[in-house]
Image (cartoon, rainbow, N blue to C red):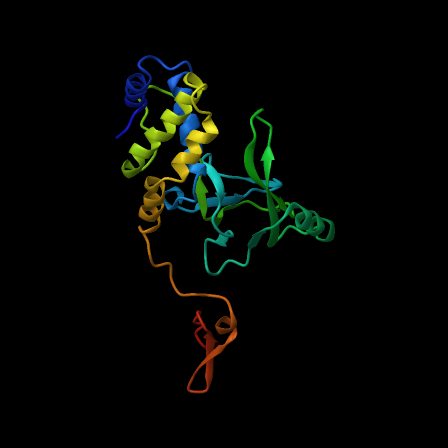
Length: 240
C-alpha cells in the first residue's frame, strides 16, 4: 500500500531534496491526471441509490461521482417510475411541456455552486410530489478524491503504484527541473510508453466478457416457442 509518506520519501530521493511544491499537492495532481488518462475499469463503483424528494427539483450524487456509466434504472421491476438523463436542451424542452408530478422524470447533470465549489447533481422535472427513497440506481465511475493527510493511502490498485510514481515524478520534476523538460513532454512520454499500454490491458482484462451483444437487426427479431411469441432476441419475456 502506497502512502503519501512513501511518496515523499521517493520524491526526496528522485530530486535529491525536498520538492518545491507540497507533497500533498503533487500527489493529488498526479492522481487526478492518472484517473483521467484512461477509462479505467477499477473506477467503476457500486451503483448509486438515487432518492426522489418531495418538492425538491434535484437529486444529489455521490461525493466521488466522476461520470455516468449508464442510464438510471428503477430499483424494483414493478416500479412505474422512470428517470432519463438527457442534454440540458432536451430537459428544458420537456420541462416546458410537462408539469405533473411524475412518474416519468427527465433529468440533466449540472454543477451546483451552493458551497462555493462546483458539485454535480441531477436537476429533474417534474418536481416530485412525494418522497421515494432509493427510487433508482445509477451506474457511475468515480473521480479522484483528494488525499488530505501524510498517512493517507493513495487510492489506486497496487499494480498501478509504480506507474503512479512515474506520473508523480513528472509533476515534481516539471516544477523543480523545468529547464530540462516541460510537464507536457514528460507526460507524453509516459502515455506513449509500453508500461501504460500494459496497464490498460491489465485493467481491461479483469472482466473480458461483458455479456451478449445487443442492438442491430437481431435485437428486433421476435422469438417464438410453439407458435407463441416469447420476446425478442437478447431478451426473454414470459408469455402472459
